[in-house]
Image: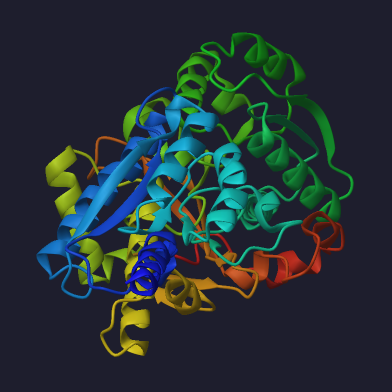
Length: 432
């Protein structure tokens, strides 16, 4: 009896101590932790992501869920701060029903979460997290980025600028004062320096993230009179900057590049004149020919518009495309297992090197777990069909053209670019 009791006790301990990765029984629901901003200045960018998740998950569940199992989103607000976000991540990861996470929007949060995900062996798909520093020094097994980094995004902006304004002489930069903003300023400057060495940077301004007023910085830009102003403001910062800069004619006195500008076309777009260079940070433009040719995308756009009385912006597509990518990973793992429910490690194995058709193009995960996504850039253009500007004179830069190869230091790669890159790049107006 004593021996039998010892065996039972050992078995119980084995079950209790078994890692969540070992569970393979089919769950009643697929819990999916989703991290985004739903409060604070970042909510202007993060809420469209959450809205998209609601629409996509509803569509997936209406079609039978994942492997016949409904998906249940568990939202975490990044507005509560990095320490709380990490604590929420740990809590969700301890539950075996959570086999994958979609996190995060903030570069600071994703850099904090990546080593935690690795420690907890939690498959994590970074739906936004633009910073190129994510995979710069560290290698991860459990962390993937299902979009592009800052490098292709801002290299594309520089290519577009030099294609439409080849004689530009002076540039000013105004970005938020943290990793995303500083990285953007460096990448944009270095790209211009490589492709057109005679360009002079006449001002670099880095106001605090979440500043309510940019009047001091706008005054400095007005005084500097640069040919071009580059900004990667986003969320409430971008909206505030546009509202404060427009009355002072900043958008007409200089060629302005709003790298994340598509996200505010519906909210402040009428303040912007024609010809402001607008970025999408990826390929998520709802009116692109690729999006409009896809019946699934058109259904997503219509459902989104009906529910939220607006069209999805590119953060919406980043989230939607990530969720569909996660579903594709599950589907691949289930097919490999012949229907047996996958473990976390089996999901990671299925994600490795996967290529997915998204709502707006394709996503390929490289051997370093970073994403390859095309980049769309255009300019504001008034439309008789909509009460806000749309994007015109667009170009779609192939991901391989604007993304450093695996194992290459991004800034070193940029420094070796040559003007021939401009000649080989697709031209503005070549994409609809």
